[in-house]
Each structure stands twice: as structure tokens, then as C-alpha cells.
Image (cartoon, rainbow, N blue to C red; front, side):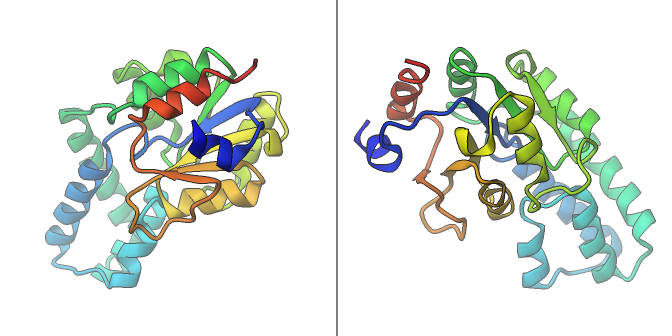
Length: 223
């Protein structure tokens, strides 16, 4: 556990807030497929800066960028994106490696929440179909706060809803958008990304949730 001791010392969380897409569930590939389909439908191409801004963003923000690139009405694009994403999402959905074990271990020690830039019904559906919903005490989504990530609202509301001040809560994120939200909210942060990704490191960067040292560290919480 030396990496965790070096990063956190004796600090352990009173609550944990997980991101969902790309951290717990393999929805990123579903979204990338959806994005490609919609862009091809409209014969549009995203500028590199727009593609980067969409990573970890809300579906509404993504639709804004696509509508701008396609020169189409935003509401039409939003409806098309939502419909296609749900169709693609229904085909196959799996937890990412280590996700189920980490969620179970954390929930056995402290109350946990999920904070996602999904709309609420979609978040509930994804967690239900993958068997993870039962472990979460609280869910935050774009329907439960005024501002989605990268604003800190979701993380602050989740931590306090679990009975912890943000500084006593741990966030786990895989995107720059979500990492900025957690840091702005004052939470401690574990990022789970490839080393070359442009994501704020927070307290510690992992490359996967499937990490025995992470489970060992969780085992010390609340002791």
C-alpha cells in the first residue's frame, strides 16, 4: 500500500463518490460509436478542440458541438443523439475490470454515491442492468443539480448527502471534466487513466480499478 500511504498518509474517506461512464462501466465505446453514427448521418466532422471538449461532458454539451459542426438545430440533434445512444446502450453493457469488486469493498466500509453527467433515468438503468445499483446510497446526475461537471455541484451535493464534508470524501474519476469537478468541490481524488491522458492527477493516478493495492487500502477504511 506504499503508493496510497505516500499519497494519502493516514487519511481515509468518510464517503466515496464514483463517476460512472468510463470508470465503472464501458460506455465510452458505446458513446464513440453513437458519435460516429450521428456525425455520419449529418455528414459533419468535429474540430479537434470540440472532440476534446466532449470527453466526459454531458450529452447536452456533446449535442451542442455536433449541432454546431453539422449546422443543424440543437433540439433535433439532441433528440437524435439520445435515441441512438439508448439503442446502442441496450445492446451490451459491462462493468470495467475491478469495478464491481471496488464498489462492493467501498460500500462495505463507507457510504458511496455515483455522480454522472448522464440524465437520471439512464444512470439508474445502467447501474441496475450491471448489478451495481444496490451498493449506492445516493445518485447524482444532470437532473439532480443545476450544473453538471466540470462544475463541482454534483460532487459537493453527493458528499454532503452521504453525511461528509467534501474534504472528507474521496472521488474516483477517469476524465478531465470529472476530475476538475471533484477538485473544485474540494474532494480528494483518485484518477483512473492511462499515463499519457491529459487528466488532472489529483492525489494518485491508477491505470485500472483492478488493483490489489487499492482493495487493500479500502480494507483499512473506518479502522
